[in-house]
Structure formats: C-alpha cells, structure tokens
Image 1 (tube, rainbow, N blue to C red):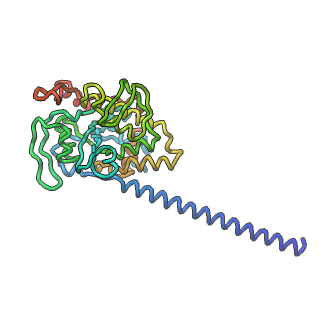
Image 2 (cartoon, one colour):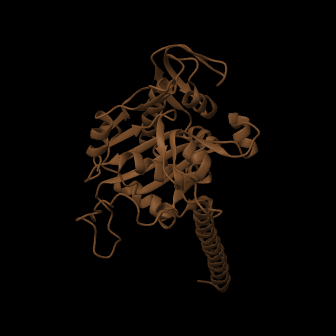
Image 3 (cartoon, helix red, strand yellow):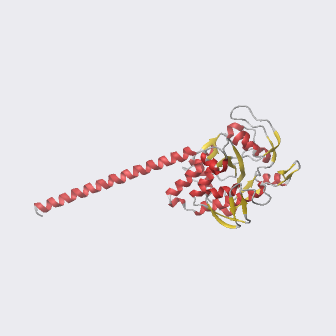
Length: 350
C-alpha cells in the first residue's frame, strides 16, 4: 500500500469514526429526551388526579372491610395484585364549574350534582362483576355527614339520594350509600362532564344501539332507534337524556347509562392502546384530568394495579342492574327502595 492509499484509508476511517460518534450522540440524546418525556408524562398524569381522604373523614363507623387476597401467582419481588372482592362507588358529576363543563351543559352556577351513581362490585377472583345503579330520585334517610369546613350535617329523612353529594361532597355520598346498603365502599371514583366527553373522543367515539327514538331538546339529542357511533358530546347527551325516552323519569336514563358503560368498556378493550403511545397518553390524560378518587387510588400506579387486577374480567361478564324501587307513597315523581328485593341485592354484594 502506498503512502497516498494509506492516507485515504485513514481519512475514511476518521470520517466513519466521526459519523458513528455523531450517531451515537444522537441516539443517546433521543434516549435521554424519551426518558425525560416519559418521566414528565407520568408526573403530569399522576398530578392530574384529585383525591379525597374518605377513610379519615368517616372513621370507623362504617360497614366492615372485605378481605383482600394477594394474587398467588405474583412474584416475591413484585407487589402482588389483589384478587379479593371489592366495591367501588362510581359517580358521574354534573359539574358546573369551568368553561368546558359549562359548555357541555353544566350551567353557570357553582357546585355539582351526582346525576349518575353506580356501585361496582367485583367478585373475588376478579373474573366477573355487577354494576348496580342507584336512581338519583330515590328518597333515602341521609345520615349526618362531616363537612370539610368543620361540623356536620343533620340527619334528613325522605331526602333525594343525590342531595348527599350536593350537600357534603364525596364523603357524604359514600356515607349515604353505605347507610342504605350496609356495604363498605372500598374505593371512590368520580368523573365530571368534560372528562367523560374527552375520554370518548380520545377513544375515537363509542358505538351504542338504542331501542327507541330519542327526541330530547333539553339534552340536544335526537336519534332514531338503531346503532349509532357517538362522539363525546353526543355520548354525554345520551347519558344525561331523560325527557325524550320512556316516561321521562330517571329510570329510563339509567338503562341508557348502563348500555353506554358497556359500550365504552368494549371500545377500550378492543382499542390496542399499547401499540399507539400517543393515543394511550391521550386516553390516560382524558381519564386522569377530570378524575377524583379516594386516597387509595390517587396515583397512577394504584390505578394501574387496579386495572391489571381486572385483566381477566371480560365485558361480557359484567352484569348491570338497578336497585329495585317502587314509586314513593308521598310523591309519585320519586321512588323508594323495594323491599325485600333491595336488601337481598345488597346482601349478595357483601
């Protein structure tokens, strides 16, 4: 090899070295930025979640806790997933704060109402579940509830069920549900107007089949009977509509809400979010941004653990029912629990 050839080879080797070094530094930079972005995304999603310390507020004057059993298949080094039965009070709040909620029908006043109330009971083994809807117009004995400002509310008889949330927030809602069911609520989850609509939009909409025409000027929903693919605003209107179906009572709305829950869970289960990080983040951001939980679920890691513990629960094994009710003797526009059917239902969930 001549001196000139040796020089050319040296220059090429130097260029390759510089190129490889540049590529290496670029990959390292991308890796650092990816890790940083992932860290920021986790912090952001975790920071989205609002929580209420219901256990401290209510103390020990509550139904007994169920037994939570760790998964036998969990490794010794990993935190085991729970497999015991669990009850979760899920509220959909008619929030009237914030521009987004107002635009979606929340109005222009302060405060909120619990227009959707469901007790989600997940059986031991977490392979089947029952969702029990409580009509908001149910007349109940509302117990004395502690207030965050100090003091407590008075016991109220023949009070509408959803007044508990309006008066005393999540703590009073949980205490009222436990009072009428004698079932311990292990967790509490609340999502508001804007959050529900965002979630549906993030999933690309939701497909629901209605059994009858819906013509409701109040919720701005007009649908013919049949299958419909709804966006977030339309899905929210479906969850809220009552005057355009059946007898215009809350009972007809509950049937639509239960259909919507199943349709939404089906949409989530059939959307492969793990292969689309951007959509996964969009869905997670939509969920956490308008979520309020008890302190046992107020972190992304705890919500993920709950989700992982339900991975063997197919939507087809989700049973939806309504608390048995009859018209209230004192007011035909209200209902009361039908006994002994209501007590037998709650007994089956303990």
